[in-house]
Structure formats: C-alpha cells, structure tokens
Amino acid sequence: MLNEFWATASATYKTLVFGAMGLIAVGIILTIIGNTSHNQGLAVTSLFVIGLGLVLHVVARVVRGQQVRKSLKK
Figure 1 (cartoon, rainbow, N blue to C red):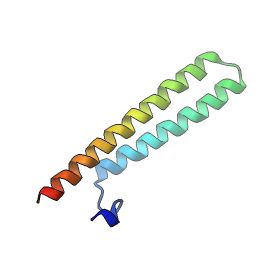
Figure 2 (cartoon, one colour):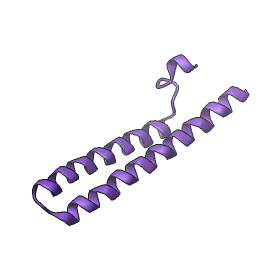
Figure 3 (tube, rainbow, N blue to C red):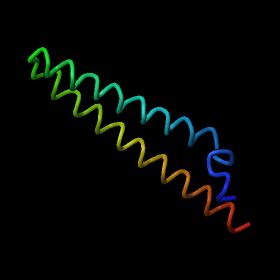
C-alpha cells in the first residue's frame, strides 16, 4: 500500500493538496507582483494567502493520516 501512495489516495486528499498548492502558487505570484510594484498591501495579503495554503496542506496531511490509519486497522 505504501508503494502506491498517490494511487491509493482519496479524491478528498488530492483535492486538498492541489488546492493548497494552488493557493501557495497564487500567494507567491502576489508577493512578486506586490513587491515589484511597491504595493505593500498586496505583498502583505499574499502572506495570508500563502499561510492559508500551508494550513490547507496540513489539513490534507491529517485527512490522509486518518485514512491510512483506518485502512491499516482492517
């Protein structure tokens, strides 16, 4: 089972991971735009977007951990 980690992952986990990666990518792009245009508000907002992406990634890890634990008990 552990050899096929991504293949055995649920759709919920995959959605959470891709959503987290998307938010982090958007946050990085906003950081670059905010800093190159000297827009302090946009640069600070981008940090919250990156933080939300990181929190979503942690939630995905918890979901996956619970799924693996449940499948190992069977």
